[in-house]
Image (spheres, rainbow, N blue to C red):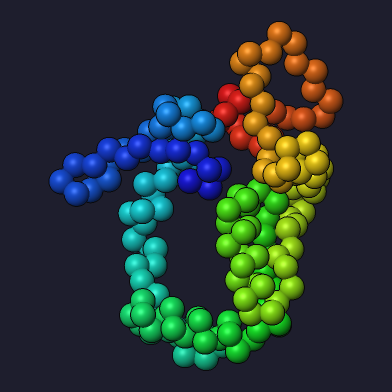
Length: 171
């Protein structure tokens, strides 16, 4: 899910029918927001892509279906040929392990390290949260607070019950 929530999928006759929050997941603890509930729409949307496509020419809307092997080999060749010209820009909510994968890729091809930035996150303080987490806990993951165990919460501008870090976790 886009917010990183754990899900359980109810399947009948090989077809996903219902998404529910995973009660054992540390982020959403069994809850699922409307966006998560609508995840099946992504799976069954008739306009979704069902396999890799290759454009006839750059910026063209004409494309043809190719095999996964052909698509992965073409992508690998293009990335290797681009080398140091590759730029990886990640959003500030990108998980640490995914950042590590991109960092290994950029190191392997001689490209600059991934740049972490998105305008939205800059407005709500994600970079500062990640920097503080790095300084205090030696990891740049976004923090998760135990608001359920707090006696008092003082919030100065953090919309922690709305769109801040995880609406499902804190809702």
